[in-house]
Structures are given as C-alpha cells and as structure tokens.
Amino acid sequence: MTELEQPPQNGIDPTAGEDDENNKARPADIEQDMREMERRKRVEAIMGSKLFREELERIVDSAREGGAGASGILQQLSDIVGVPVNRVSNVFKSSGCMVPINDIRGVESMGYAKGEKILRCKLAATFRLLDLNGWTQGLGAQITARLKVDQEYFLVNPYGLLYHEITASALNKVDMQGQIVEQGTTNFGVNKSHFVLHSVVHAARPDIRCAIYIGCSPVVAISSLKSGLLALTKDACVLGEISTHAYTGLFDEDERNRLVRNLGPNSKVMLLANHGALCCGETIEEAFYAACHIVQACETQLKLLPVGVDNLVLIPEESRKLIYDQSRRPPEDLEKKFAAVTTDDDAAGKEEVPVHPKIGSPPKWRVGGAEFEALMRMLDNAGYRTGYIYRHPLIKSDPPKPKNDVELPPAVSSLGYLLEEEELFRQGIWKKGDLRKGGDRSRWLNSPNVYQKVEVLETGTPDPKKITKVEIITFEDMQTTQQQTQKVVNLKEIEGN
Image (cartoon, rainbow, N blue to C red):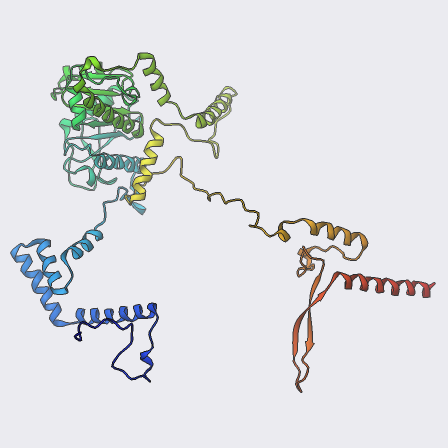
C-alpha cells in the first residue's frame, strides 16, 4: 500500500515513537474539531493569497466581457476550488429569498390612512395565493378593493408586475375613473381598459368591496358553453346566484347598462362569455372564497363533459339553497357564540344603551374568513410575511400528559402527614407555625422527624474547627423530651405552691 493509500489513523502518527503522547487515539469529537481548525487555516490561507484574488478578478472580468453568465462563472469557480458545480449552484440558490408581501415597515405605515395598510397586505396576499395556485393570466388580470364604503378610492395592481411580484406598497390607489391618486412604490400605471369592468361593478353595487377577475383555462372554457356552470357539485352551489354577461370589451353606455342589469342586486359571481368570471364579495375573504370554488366547480364540470350533458345529475333547487345557506353561517360550535353576542347587542339597542365591544367576545363571522386565515398561516409559515392580523389566532396548548401512578411519589401525593400534624398539635408536642413568619422550613411534611443543623468541633486535632452536621431528632426523642419538660414544669409548680 502506498503512502497516499494509507487509511486514517484517528490522530495516531505511525512514524512517531512509542513514548510520544500523540500516539494515543483522540476522541471522535476532538478529532473533528482538529480537522475543522485545519480546514479553516487552509481557507484563510487561500482567501489571503494574492494569486487567488487576482485569479478570481480575472474570471469575473472575463465573464463580464464575454457574457458567459452565472453558469460559466460557477463552472470556473468549481474548477479552482475543486467543488462540483452542482454543490456551488445549490449554495447560490439557497441564498435567494422570496419577496415579502408586507414590505411596509416602521414609520412607513404612518403615511397610510387607518386600515389601509391591512387592506394592502390582504390584497397583496391574494395575488400571491392566485400565483401559487396557478390561476394567473399574465399582466391583464386585475383585482380591485374599495378602501372605504363612503369613498370612491380603490387599490389596484400596477400594470407591468406579475402576481408574485406584487407587494403591499406596490399597489396603486385610483379613483372611479382609473386616475392614480397615490402612486405605489413602482413606476407602473393602471390598465384603464381592464379597470372599466371593475369600476362599473363598484359603482352599481356599493356593497361589493372586492372584485377578482379569474381567467384561467377551466373558467374560460365553462364561460364559453351555452349551458354555463351547472349545479353538479357543492362548489357550484356555494356560489349562489350566478349571472351571465356577453362581454365584448367595448364599454360604451349601452354595454355598461347591460352589465348592471345582468349583475342584478344580489349576484356576486358573473360569467363573462368567452372571457372567464368576475368574483365579488363584501370582503376580500368572500371574493377569494368564491374564486376558489368557481375554479374547482369548472374543473369538475370539464371532467364530466365527455359523458354528455344528458347523463349528468344536477343537484335539486332545494338542496342548492340549503347548501348555500349553510356556507353563509358559522359552524355549530361558533354559531352559539355569535348568536349570544347578537342577542346582547339587540337588547342593548332596545334599551337605548350604547353598545361597546366586549373583551373576549368572538369577532363578526365572515364568509370564507376561516379558510383565508388558514392560507395566511400557510404563507407566514413559508416565510412570505403577510402582515395579516388574525381574527382567530392559533393558540397551541401543551399535549396531554399520560396518566401514570408512578409519576408522583406516594410520599408526596399522600395526605397522611396532615393527620400526623393534627395529632401532634392536639397533644401539644408540636406547635404549628406560619412559614411566611420564619417558621420551621427544614421539616419534612411527610415525616415526623426533625432535622436540625448543629455546629460541633473537630476531634483529634490540636486546632479544631467548627463543622456543621445535621442532627436527626426522631419522633421518640421528641416524646421523651416533652415528657421531661412536663415533669420539670410540674416540679416548679409544686415548689411554687
């Protein structure tokens, strides 16, 4: 076996003498530390080398001039360092971070109106959810959110950013005509031709505060059918009344009037012929709830179309209404809490007493609120930093511990010492004391013995020192001492008489 092929000796130098202390094998952890120290010394030597620095500058300059790109630089670095290029590229990939949703930090939030920052974070998180689900449609799609009911200001995504690039501060604030009132942190404007559809809906229905355009392939395919979306699944029933509009894209006065008539006073989901769907809601949570269910309903219907429409079984009208009503109510365990809060508020209103929000009372139920909060937790756990304020925060308690009889010793869990103390107190042998007033803190409550510290002198030395020992006073010694004390007291009383 050659010198290069010799196996590692675990810190033992075979060439050294037997009397050398290095012949002893080092422990594994010390051996690992020694290797790490040697590796660091080599790295410091390489990084401090002038030749290495000049070679690295030459590689970067040549790649910049020749346009080799990052892959060419990584390949040359791997050749110099001796590390495979896949390991080097993985290091560079892992160092990249995602764009946070909430990029409004510190004093920057003071520049926004009350509640605007929260609305911006929720709307930007909605764009990120649509991107993660694959429901994006390039740059043309829009999502709008009304800031306040009494104001005609809206937040809209800038035209030029993809869904995964949109952050809370990048959203533009516009008026009903699409004019930018407050520019976001980007230099992109607003696509007014697409915003007209949202502005008409917001103007006709003040109760709608959020409108999401969905133009993914399944929804566009179903909007192109004459039959439209059929009530085949529960996802289609929770959408309620679905209106249809022959969308042309040319919003003249006649087009706007027809859109308002087709939308009606109650519908919140509209199929745009050959273009997709517009999902609306009183909150962002409700609009996203409708968007999720319409995509799932359209995908299911597309899978069932090959069997023929005549072979499909539709859900009856009564069942549709029941499913829709149930989706608009909280679960049974929360419904009682909301009902109790509503009853108290109604009673206070009849008595003309101002109603104040109760501390600890459940917040108002929102359609799709629980699902939206669960998705926000998913984004926060993934590192997207949504900035969402949870209405129902997740509080985890400690897991239940197994019940074990041996978990607590019998001497600690037993209550027998209480009976012993009571008996001693009745006999006058032991007087109860308050521990807070400096009582006997060294006494074991589950033992009748008393442990007392005693200082004694050493024996057998010319210069004795004091030694502290623990003296045990047993229960029998206490009885004997008490009897002797009682006899002395009786003798004194007799002598006094």
